[in-house]
Image (cartoon, rainbow, N blue to C red; front, top):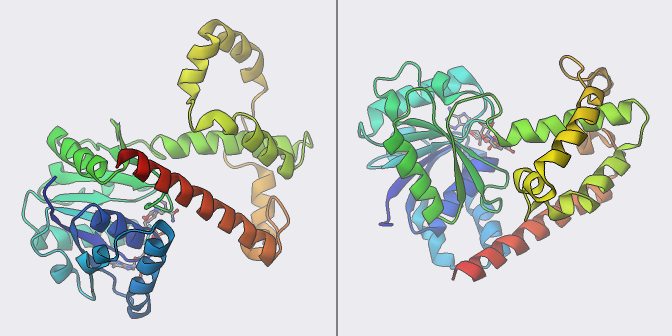
Length: 306
Ligand SMILES: NC(=O)c1ccc[n+]([C@@H]2O[C@H](COP(=O)([O-])OP(=O)(O)OC[C@H]3O[C@@H](n4cnc5c(N)ncnc54)[C@H](O)[C@@H]3O)[C@@H](O)[C@H]2O)c1
């Protein structure tokens, strides 16, 4: 794919990783980050990714940071918005983008939960607004959900998937703008049951993590649930569903166990206790383990595709 000029709005956690992966694919990237301190730390954060992945340092020269939106998006064909998760803020950004970029430039939002239908509601050219849900860290996790909202044109979906696939991402087409898209619905369906099992005293939180990581999680990266159902046979899947579904948690809304934890200030690693107990050292070990694992996988994928 020919090199393009691409804008990234917000140079925070997601924005800097998105900027990196687009620059690594050969594009020139303008980042708009209004907070001076965060903008100032961008080169060092990009350098850390480069060190982790061992890429060509020249790619960093393709990323420039700006304190205003217009110069960051001048002449762009795509914009990826990764600003804070607030609807009025995102709507304001998209309104400004509409007057700053060509009418056919594609406007993609990385929102986790706000439908891009809402973000683009007041725009003139709504057909070029699309959801692109990256997973954290976006430069290491392959998946991007490309969410077609009620106004997105099929051509915009096609071009967005093409750009992302060309940049080495696994882009999937989500045909309706449903809350949580696909990945978070699946992830939270599992968390719902996990929390209910712990709350009922069936096992502790550590056991949940072990069951997932050493059990079905050990094969999940190479065997999805649909493949697995077909592998064992849908008759068996139905037999299990007949017995099990009536037993699964149906608490309306978030489980009281989760609400109580949050009300008590037990928020997880950052407070030393959440579903499990943490020290700064054990929390850091988890972060290191995750980062090393994802980086190794990313390098292996790159080697395979070279
Ligand atoms: N963190 C995740 O795991 C994750 C995963 C998928 C999607 N997302 C989504 O990505 C988006 C960004 O999340 P994040 O985790 O990178 O947040 P973040 O707070 O790390 O980054 C947001 C950045 O936007 C900047 N910003 C503030 N106001 C702005 C404005 N008016 N215009 C442009 N930039 C502005 C902030 O200074 C900050 O640097 C959110 O919509 C979030 O829901 C996050």
